[in-house]
Amino acid sequence: MTSEDSKGKSSYYGTVLPQTNKCNEIQVECVYIPVISHMDITNNTVELKVDVDLSWAATLEDVKKYNADPIEFIPEFAPNIVFPNCFRVDTDELIPLQANVRYQIREGSRIFIRHRFIGTLSVAYDVSSFPFDVQNIPIVFCVSFYDKDQLIFKVPADKNIVWVTKRYTNIPGFEFVRTLSDTIEIETFSHVVTIVQAKRTPGPYFFRIGLPLWSLNAATFSMYALSSIEEVINVLITVMLAFVGMVYVLSTLVPLAGKKTLFDAYAMVSMILCVIAMFMSSLQLPFGYEKVPLYFHIVLSVILHFHFSMRISRAIAKEKKKETMCFEELSQFMTIENLIDKAYNREMVEC
Image 1 (cartoon, rainbow, N blue to C red):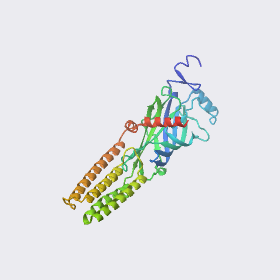
Image 2: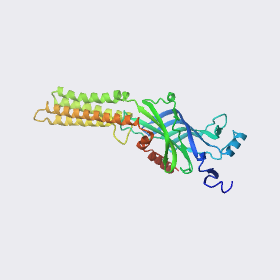
Image 3: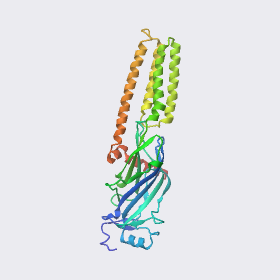
Image 4: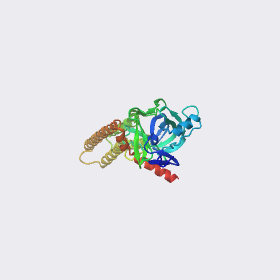
């Protein structure tokens, strides 16, 4: 290679590639997700299997080597695909596309590979709108040590490249809504981000959490049918203990989040109302025990349920908006850059 031929070229670990032709552009042909086995919202992880098909332009030397021996063929440039938000790896390797051929040159002199990843990825779940939440599962990959001036990814805009086999990804309590995929730049590196949206089915949680909480709230009004203060306080103490039991059930069914969930707020305010009722009943106010606490209780209960209904409406509208966001809006909403930075920092600490 002459000095004129090497102008405007960049070195990839000893291999000289042109900066201006398609050798430094990797096209994402397909992101195939056959299995999503588990979404652990408590630990912010997802277990899945994903196959990524990539292609890039072959050089004349690559074509000669491939024609000579397709099985042993290794191109001059072979990208090392990594998943920066990886939490645990079970399988991370190239899969032969045909027989034992790992690097296949097809029409148009393009090299095709299939990279398979099986393992656990870190996901920043948002459960503040539980049980109406729509979760965004990001699958991010890039190439190590090559910035955007040396290598960039291209995602076709005219076709869908993401395929999710719903037959084997039936996560209990969730329904997969849609998928999006595009490229973003993080710290001057080109990344491919595939987002799988999963919508929670809220119905079962209303039967297991919502209805019991509302029933307990309604049960507090039974104290006004009693004439003895001791009986009233006993009823309120029983309801209070039942609320404590429901909070424990909530802690097992509802994952922890940075913000309180709708049911968290409802349960805690209901407990506060129960304590207020106990306090006012024990005082035996001289201006009418039977009527004033009842009116006061009704007003507070109406305010609670009105506020809770408004929060449900806002939560539903917020999650509905996620289902209509484009890729750019979702990537900003999810702060994927922060997720990748945390993953890199975790790897540095582990090293």
